[in-house]
Image (spheres, rainbow, N blue to C red):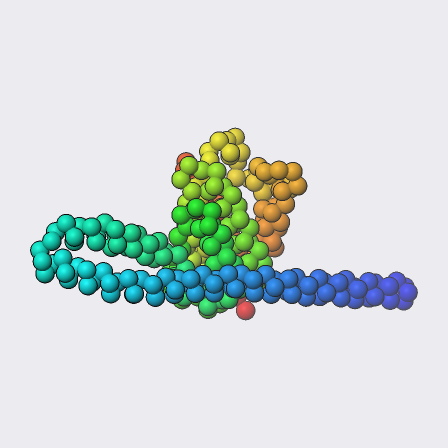
Amino acid sequence: MLLLVGVTVIFLMIINWLYRFLRERELEKNKTDQYMQLQAYIMEIEKMYEDIRSFRHDYANILLMLDEGIRTGDLGMIKRIYEHSIQPTASQLNGYSYRLDNLINLDVSELKSIIASKMLIAQKRGIDIRLEIEGRISEVYMDIIDLCRVVSCFLDNAIDAALESGNPMISIVLIHEADIQTIMIRNSYSQAALEGISVDDLYKRNFSTKAANRGLGLYNISRVLHSNRYAALDTRKESEFFMQTLILKRAIS
């Protein structure tokens, strides 16, 4: 009996050590990934700053030309300035209006880096991606590593699905309330790609609409969420959009 107890204790100690070891490795990997993602985010911010500096310089020249056109009453000059200088610049600035500016309301660096990185990837691939954050978020009601895994998986799938649609679009909405946080990811998709496939099918082990061995993402996510009694997921397949809504409740101490 004593030998059995001793073996059991040693076995449990080994399991505990393995868990902590794997957890530390995962933390280190996440830190590396987050650093790379934050670097991409910083580079994009710097690019936006350079574009704004360039716009300020061009803006001064545009005002001088407009002043001359108005002073001389040259409507043709004013029209040319508008079509060739003002209108293209306005379109460029509108493109920035929904890109990364809302991330200022998210103070959780791990989650911010994930969202910023995926947004930049989507934009480079021609997807119209929008972000809205309601309320300032300085904490999350879920283990941050698990949450980053979930959000990263959802955004990767949203990017893949949106690219298969005729009008690629993704919207991300984060809502922070007193005891509830909501993360909604909505994307366009090809109806042909999911024809005859139910939402439940997407979370089955080894199921994938892509190549072989790519069906573990959502299955693993479902296991992560199932083990968290404060998290709930609503997945919907609408006529034109696919939506994932993750609801997190503050844990009761």
